[in-house]
Length: 218
Image (cartoon, rainbow, N blue to C red; front, side):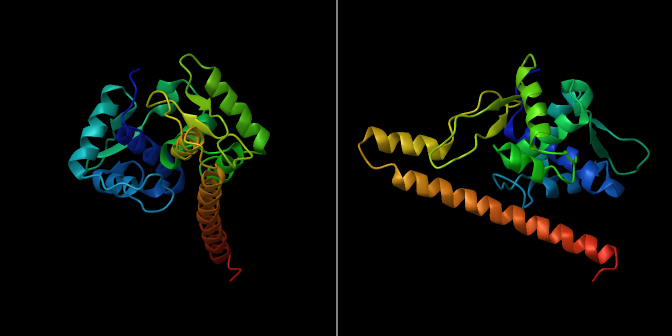
């Protein structure tokens, strides 16, 4: 299978995510798919794809049998076929989807961000699936070197080909080469980590509040 484009990966990730989070509206219409691709939350990077661009990405995924058109509706809708084509279980599909939607993450971050797609018993369970994805031929995931200020290594998917060195690590390496202290790079990495954690915490709080409301606890 050829490498996916970034937008194809975003489309595939959205389809996997929405199948789990909004099953009542899945398969997705083009409008829903575009909205999912352009979400401002739980997306890294945030993009502004047009209907035509998303449709082109869908056509590319259809050619790879990763996406097909659903039937039984007057509006054309799309659904994914990731598990069968990639030859991985549903739990691994959830991990790949979150990596496609949010970028490189630690195993702990993946466990949290996969909560609505697949509930992992513990972090070691996530790591087990990541190792299996990395061991596949061709590999579907890779463990990245730890960047400055990072205590845990991050993982990235390989569906779009080889992963470039993270921007923060590259900037820190450049600073090292020029004799500049790496403290600034470490600070930037820590700030980025705090921002990601704040976003995850806000999403988790919203989920808990919604569940409490549905259960009549509020």
